[in-house]
Length: 119
Length: 114
Image 1 (spheres, helix red, strand yellow):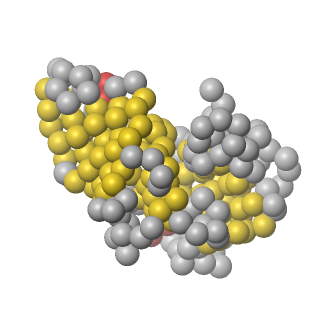
Image 2 (image 1 turned 90 degrees about the vertical axis):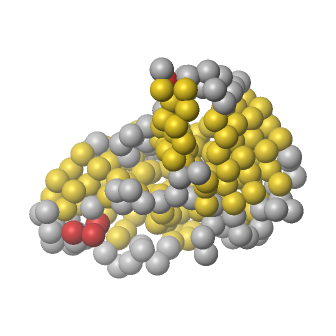
Image 3 (image 1 turned 30 degrees about the horizontal axis):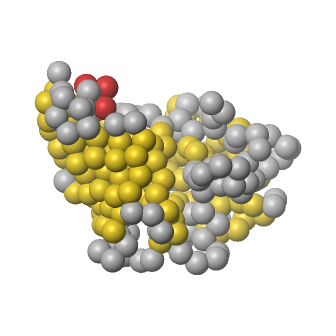
């Protein structure tokens, strides 16, 4: 089954450093997302991306965050100057809009996540 | 708003028993999805139920949706030790501009003892 892949699986970074988390969404998907989960807390929406632009973002997604789809396959999340509170698991997700069968256009598929620890 | 609140927060059962987890939400939804997360791992999609559906089955999973009560339940029948994980409901709000954004609940930690 196609899957969303994320790299790195773990990253430790110093406070103030820039971090780029990478994702390869499922190939025929057109909507892309980043979510995060602080340890022991809910999974929170950060941003959605469609047609090469941000379609929606949460209040968490401030100027320190940016997303990019540099080519036809990768989708990246950049944190410009990391803070301790950015430590979390970051999930990339993708969705198709093609309703080929059942719910395939509605189901959002998540990657394994990237653990980010800011020290 | 506290969209997607699950109960119980933790559930401990013996292998072979059924596990029922509930989810409540506050706003109108387009669909509700259940995910499983093994400790420290990714979110695995289990089942999606649309707002105009009342019940769906997938293998040992049964999901119900009551839009009048704004609640859903996930039933895992004949549980196995491998079902041990956290289970989350996630709602997609009704309306045209959500672009599929999901709002997650806190999750239910299920432990199945062999």
